[in-house]
Image 1 (cartoon, rainbow, N blue to C red):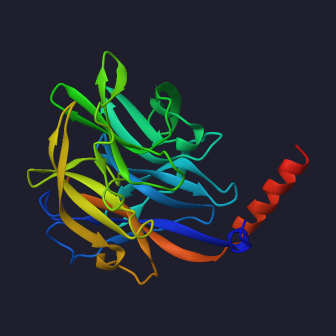
Image 2: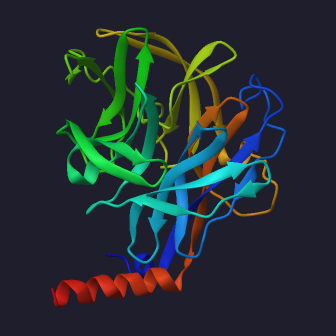
Amino acid sequence: MKLKSIFEMWSWTTAVRFNSDERTSLLNNKTDAFTVVPNSKRYWTADPFLFEKDGVLYLFFEAFDIFKRKGLLGYRTLSEGEFGDIHIFYEHDSHLSFPFIYEENGEIYVMPESAKSGELFRLRCKHFPDQWEKEAVLLKENVVDTVRYVDGDNVYYISELVTEPNVYDRVDLYYLQDGSLLPCAHNPVKADASNARGAGAVCVIDGVRVRPAQDCGDSYGERLNLNELMRIDREHFEERTIDTFTYRDIRLNESITVDGIHTYNKLGKVEVIDLRIPGKFNLLYTVGFINKIFAKLFH
Protein backbone atom coordinates (compact mmCIF):
# COMPACT_ATOMS: atom_id res chain seq x y z
CA MET A 1 0.00 0.00 0.00
CA LYS A 2 1.29 3.45 -0.90
CA LEU A 3 1.82 5.70 2.12
CA LYS A 4 0.01 8.44 0.23
CA SER A 5 -3.25 6.42 0.25
CA ILE A 6 -3.28 6.38 4.06
CA PHE A 7 -3.26 10.15 4.46
CA GLU A 8 -4.55 11.52 1.16
CA MET A 9 -8.15 11.09 0.04
CA TRP A 10 -9.50 11.81 -3.41
CA SER A 11 -13.22 12.46 -3.37
CA TRP A 12 -16.26 13.17 -5.53
CA THR A 13 -19.09 15.63 -5.37
CA THR A 14 -22.38 15.96 -7.23
CA ALA A 15 -23.70 18.93 -9.19
CA VAL A 16 -27.19 19.65 -10.50
CA ARG A 17 -28.75 21.87 -13.16
CA PHE A 18 -32.41 22.90 -13.38
CA ASN A 19 -33.14 23.73 -17.01
CA SER A 20 -35.98 25.82 -18.38
CA ASP A 21 -37.45 22.91 -20.36
CA GLU A 22 -37.05 19.16 -20.86
CA ARG A 23 -35.33 19.48 -24.25
CA THR A 24 -32.34 21.30 -22.79
CA SER A 25 -29.39 19.09 -21.89
CA LEU A 26 -25.62 18.88 -22.16
CA LEU A 27 -26.17 17.84 -25.76
CA ASN A 28 -27.22 21.36 -26.68
CA ASN A 29 -26.23 23.54 -23.73
CA LYS A 30 -22.83 23.52 -22.06
CA THR A 31 -23.06 27.21 -21.18
CA ASP A 32 -25.41 27.29 -18.20
CA ALA A 33 -23.74 26.39 -14.92
CA PHE A 34 -24.33 23.38 -12.70
CA THR A 35 -24.76 24.01 -8.98
CA VAL A 36 -22.42 22.09 -6.70
CA VAL A 37 -24.33 20.04 -4.11
CA PRO A 38 -22.23 20.23 -0.92
CA ASN A 39 -20.81 17.14 0.73
CA SER A 40 -20.74 16.71 4.50
CA LYS A 41 -17.74 16.20 6.76
CA ARG A 42 -18.54 12.48 7.06
CA TYR A 43 -19.59 11.67 3.49
CA TRP A 44 -18.74 12.57 -0.06
CA THR A 45 -21.19 11.69 -2.84
CA ALA A 46 -20.96 10.17 -6.32
CA ASP A 47 -23.04 8.17 -8.84
CA PRO A 48 -26.12 10.42 -8.55
CA PHE A 49 -29.57 9.25 -9.69
CA LEU A 50 -32.80 11.27 -9.71
CA PHE A 51 -36.19 10.04 -8.51
CA GLU A 52 -39.45 11.92 -7.98
CA LYS A 53 -42.19 10.83 -5.58
CA ASP A 54 -45.29 12.72 -4.45
CA GLY A 55 -43.99 15.91 -6.01
CA VAL A 56 -40.66 15.77 -4.16
CA LEU A 57 -37.38 15.34 -6.05
CA TYR A 58 -34.80 13.02 -4.50
CA LEU A 59 -31.15 12.48 -5.22
CA PHE A 60 -29.87 8.93 -4.62
CA PHE A 61 -26.12 8.33 -4.62
CA GLU A 62 -23.11 6.51 -3.29
CA ALA A 63 -22.32 8.10 0.06
CA PHE A 64 -18.70 7.30 0.75
CA ASP A 65 -18.17 7.05 4.50
CA ILE A 66 -14.82 8.75 5.05
CA PHE A 67 -14.31 7.12 8.46
CA LYS A 68 -15.36 3.60 7.43
CA ARG A 69 -13.59 4.06 4.07
CA LYS A 70 -16.31 2.37 2.03
CA GLY A 71 -19.36 3.22 -0.03
CA LEU A 72 -22.87 3.23 1.45
CA LEU A 73 -26.16 4.17 -0.19
CA GLY A 74 -27.62 7.56 0.57
CA TYR A 75 -30.29 10.07 -0.44
CA ARG A 76 -31.24 13.70 0.05
CA THR A 77 -34.07 15.92 -1.13
CA LEU A 78 -33.37 18.33 -3.93
CA SER A 79 -34.93 21.53 -5.20
CA GLU A 80 -33.69 24.56 -7.04
CA GLY A 81 -31.40 26.33 -4.59
CA GLU A 82 -32.07 23.98 -1.65
CA PHE A 83 -30.51 20.64 -0.69
CA GLY A 84 -31.59 18.37 2.13
CA ASP A 85 -29.19 16.64 4.49
CA ILE A 86 -27.45 13.40 3.53
CA HIS A 87 -29.22 10.31 4.88
CA ILE A 88 -27.91 6.73 4.71
CA PHE A 89 -30.55 4.20 3.71
CA TYR A 90 -28.53 1.00 3.23
CA GLU A 91 -25.17 -0.44 4.24
CA HIS A 92 -23.63 -3.76 3.23
CA ASP A 93 -20.58 -5.64 4.45
CA SER A 94 -18.83 -4.66 1.23
CA HIS A 95 -18.62 -1.47 -0.80
CA LEU A 96 -21.79 -0.26 -2.58
CA SER A 97 -22.26 2.41 -5.24
CA PHE A 98 -24.30 3.33 -8.37
CA PRO A 99 -27.83 3.04 -6.85
CA PHE A 100 -29.94 2.54 -9.97
CA ILE A 101 -33.49 3.26 -8.79
CA TYR A 102 -36.74 2.37 -10.55
CA GLU A 103 -40.43 1.73 -9.95
CA GLU A 104 -42.37 -1.30 -11.20
CA ASN A 105 -45.97 -2.31 -10.42
CA GLY A 106 -46.17 0.14 -7.55
CA GLU A 107 -42.96 -1.09 -5.91
CA ILE A 108 -39.71 0.90 -5.76
CA TYR A 109 -36.39 -0.87 -6.14
CA VAL A 110 -32.71 0.02 -5.99
CA MET A 111 -30.16 -2.12 -7.82
CA PRO A 112 -26.73 -1.02 -6.54
CA GLU A 113 -23.32 -1.84 -7.89
CA SER A 114 -22.15 -4.53 -5.47
CA ALA A 115 -19.31 -6.16 -7.40
CA LYS A 116 -17.12 -6.64 -4.35
CA SER A 117 -19.74 -9.03 -2.95
CA GLY A 118 -19.64 -11.07 -6.17
CA GLU A 119 -23.32 -10.61 -6.93
CA LEU A 120 -25.86 -8.21 -8.36
CA PHE A 121 -28.76 -7.82 -5.95
CA ARG A 122 -31.90 -5.75 -5.65
CA LEU A 123 -33.36 -3.81 -2.73
CA ARG A 124 -37.10 -3.33 -2.28
CA CYS A 125 -38.43 -0.27 -0.54
CA LYS A 126 -40.42 -1.00 2.62
CA HIS A 127 -40.95 2.66 3.52
CA PHE A 128 -39.84 5.44 1.21
CA PRO A 129 -37.21 6.74 1.28
CA ASP A 130 -35.43 5.32 4.30
CA GLN A 131 -36.33 1.62 4.77
CA TRP A 132 -35.11 -1.00 2.31
CA GLU A 133 -34.54 -4.74 2.34
CA LYS A 134 -32.44 -7.05 0.18
CA GLU A 135 -35.14 -8.71 -1.86
CA ALA A 136 -33.44 -10.71 -4.62
CA VAL A 137 -30.07 -11.75 -6.05
CA LEU A 138 -30.28 -11.17 -9.80
CA LEU A 139 -26.86 -12.46 -10.86
CA LYS A 140 -24.01 -14.32 -9.22
CA GLU A 141 -21.42 -12.43 -11.24
CA ASN A 142 -18.89 -9.66 -10.73
CA VAL A 143 -20.70 -6.96 -12.72
CA VAL A 144 -20.47 -3.19 -12.40
CA ASP A 145 -22.75 -0.19 -13.02
CA THR A 146 -25.77 -2.13 -14.24
CA VAL A 147 -28.78 -0.27 -15.65
CA ARG A 148 -32.21 -1.66 -16.37
CA TYR A 149 -33.93 -0.67 -19.60
CA VAL A 150 -37.54 -1.46 -20.51
CA ASP A 151 -38.43 -1.57 -24.21
CA GLY A 152 -42.09 -2.46 -24.62
CA ASP A 153 -42.58 -5.92 -23.14
CA ASN A 154 -38.84 -6.59 -23.02
CA VAL A 155 -36.58 -5.87 -20.05
CA TYR A 156 -32.84 -5.59 -20.55
CA TYR A 157 -29.94 -5.17 -18.16
CA ILE A 158 -26.93 -3.37 -19.63
CA SER A 159 -23.89 -4.18 -17.56
CA GLU A 160 -20.20 -4.97 -17.55
CA LEU A 161 -18.73 -8.27 -16.45
CA VAL A 162 -15.33 -7.60 -14.89
CA THR A 163 -12.91 -10.35 -15.88
CA GLU A 164 -9.70 -8.56 -14.85
CA PRO A 165 -9.19 -6.15 -11.93
CA ASN A 166 -9.62 -2.51 -12.93
CA VAL A 167 -10.23 -3.34 -16.61
CA TYR A 168 -13.48 -1.82 -17.92
CA ASP A 169 -13.63 -2.53 -21.63
CA ARG A 170 -16.87 -4.37 -22.39
CA VAL A 171 -20.65 -4.12 -22.47
CA ASP A 172 -22.62 -7.21 -21.45
CA LEU A 173 -26.31 -7.55 -22.20
CA TYR A 174 -28.78 -9.61 -20.18
CA TYR A 175 -32.51 -10.04 -20.72
CA LEU A 176 -35.33 -11.01 -18.40
CA GLN A 177 -37.08 -14.28 -19.20
CA ASP A 178 -39.44 -16.13 -16.85
CA GLY A 179 -38.09 -14.19 -13.89
CA SER A 180 -34.43 -14.95 -14.59
CA LEU A 181 -31.65 -12.89 -16.15
CA LEU A 182 -30.12 -14.61 -19.15
CA PRO A 183 -26.94 -13.45 -20.91
CA CYS A 184 -26.94 -12.50 -24.56
CA ALA A 185 -25.27 -15.26 -26.59
CA HIS A 186 -22.95 -12.68 -28.15
CA ASN A 187 -21.58 -11.18 -24.91
CA PRO A 188 -19.68 -8.99 -24.74
CA VAL A 189 -21.87 -7.10 -27.19
CA LYS A 190 -19.31 -4.30 -27.25
CA ALA A 191 -15.59 -4.19 -26.48
CA ASP A 192 -14.12 -0.71 -26.12
CA ALA A 193 -12.47 0.66 -22.99
CA SER A 194 -13.12 4.20 -24.20
CA ASN A 195 -16.89 3.75 -24.47
CA ALA A 196 -18.20 0.77 -22.52
CA ARG A 197 -18.70 1.12 -18.77
CA GLY A 198 -22.08 2.54 -17.83
CA ALA A 199 -22.35 6.10 -16.55
CA GLY A 200 -26.07 6.43 -15.84
CA ALA A 201 -29.55 5.34 -16.82
CA VAL A 202 -30.76 5.25 -20.41
CA CYS A 203 -32.80 8.41 -20.90
CA VAL A 204 -34.67 10.03 -23.78
CA ILE A 205 -33.40 13.45 -24.84
CA ASP A 206 -35.37 15.22 -27.56
CA GLY A 207 -36.66 11.88 -28.87
CA VAL A 208 -33.26 10.14 -28.82
CA ARG A 209 -32.50 7.18 -26.55
CA VAL A 210 -29.24 8.08 -24.81
CA ARG A 211 -26.93 5.75 -22.87
CA PRO A 212 -24.20 7.58 -20.91
CA ALA A 213 -20.89 5.69 -20.96
CA GLN A 214 -17.54 6.23 -19.29
CA ASP A 215 -14.31 6.62 -21.20
CA CYS A 216 -11.81 4.51 -19.28
CA GLY A 217 -9.36 4.31 -22.18
CA ASP A 218 -6.78 6.77 -20.85
CA SER A 219 -7.73 7.09 -17.21
CA TYR A 220 -10.69 6.56 -14.89
CA GLY A 221 -12.98 9.60 -14.89
CA GLU A 222 -11.34 11.32 -17.86
CA ARG A 223 -14.49 11.89 -19.93
CA LEU A 224 -18.08 10.84 -20.65
CA ASN A 225 -19.81 9.79 -23.85
CA LEU A 226 -23.48 10.20 -24.64
CA ASN A 227 -24.42 7.37 -26.99
CA GLU A 228 -27.55 7.00 -29.06
CA LEU A 229 -28.99 3.55 -28.39
CA MET A 230 -29.90 2.53 -31.92
CA ARG A 231 -30.84 -1.13 -31.52
CA ILE A 232 -31.30 -3.44 -28.58
CA ASP A 233 -32.79 -6.93 -28.52
CA ARG A 234 -31.81 -10.37 -27.30
CA GLU A 235 -29.28 -10.79 -30.09
CA HIS A 236 -28.12 -7.24 -30.86
CA PHE A 237 -26.78 -4.10 -29.23
CA GLU A 238 -25.93 -1.12 -31.42
CA GLU A 239 -25.11 2.46 -30.45
CA ARG A 240 -23.22 5.46 -31.73
CA THR A 241 -21.57 8.32 -29.89
CA ILE A 242 -23.34 11.65 -30.37
CA ASP A 243 -21.35 13.73 -27.87
CA THR A 244 -18.26 13.51 -25.69
CA PHE A 245 -17.28 15.85 -22.89
CA THR A 246 -14.81 16.10 -20.02
CA TYR A 247 -14.92 17.78 -16.64
CA ARG A 248 -13.32 20.79 -18.33
CA ASP A 249 -16.52 21.33 -20.34
CA ILE A 250 -18.68 21.64 -17.22
CA ARG A 251 -19.39 25.13 -15.91
CA LEU A 252 -20.01 25.41 -12.17
CA ASN A 253 -21.62 28.04 -9.97
CA GLU A 254 -18.51 28.21 -7.80
CA SER A 255 -14.78 27.83 -8.24
CA ILE A 256 -13.59 24.39 -7.15
CA THR A 257 -10.78 22.26 -8.51
CA VAL A 258 -11.96 19.06 -10.20
CA ASP A 259 -10.18 16.51 -12.37
CA GLY A 260 -12.74 13.88 -13.37
CA ILE A 261 -16.34 13.01 -14.23
CA HIS A 262 -18.08 9.64 -14.53
CA THR A 263 -21.87 9.85 -14.10
CA TYR A 264 -24.69 11.66 -15.89
CA ASN A 265 -28.43 11.35 -15.30
CA LYS A 266 -31.44 13.33 -16.44
CA LEU A 267 -35.05 13.45 -15.27
CA GLY A 268 -37.35 15.92 -16.99
CA LYS A 269 -35.77 19.37 -16.75
CA VAL A 270 -33.14 18.32 -14.22
CA GLU A 271 -29.63 17.05 -14.95
CA VAL A 272 -27.12 15.72 -12.44
CA ILE A 273 -23.44 14.81 -12.71
CA ASP A 274 -20.56 13.95 -10.42
CA LEU A 275 -17.08 15.46 -10.37
CA ARG A 276 -13.83 14.20 -8.87
CA ILE A 277 -11.84 16.38 -6.48
CA PRO A 278 -8.05 15.82 -6.38
CA GLY A 279 -6.59 14.03 -3.39
CA LYS A 280 -5.72 15.95 -0.24
CA PHE A 281 -5.09 15.21 3.42
CA ASN A 282 -8.18 14.31 5.45
CA LEU A 283 -7.80 13.61 9.17
CA LEU A 284 -10.99 11.53 9.44
CA TYR A 285 -9.83 9.36 6.54
CA THR A 286 -6.49 8.73 8.23
CA VAL A 287 -8.14 7.96 11.58
CA GLY A 288 -10.41 5.53 9.77
CA PHE A 289 -7.40 3.69 8.39
CA ILE A 290 -5.87 3.38 11.86
CA ASN A 291 -9.22 2.17 13.26
CA LYS A 292 -9.37 -0.57 10.62
CA ILE A 293 -5.89 -1.76 11.52
CA PHE A 294 -6.73 -1.98 15.22
CA ALA A 295 -10.04 -3.71 14.46
CA LYS A 296 -8.18 -6.43 12.52
CA LEU A 297 -5.53 -6.85 15.22
CA PHE A 298 -7.99 -7.24 18.08
CA HIS A 299 -10.87 -9.00 16.27
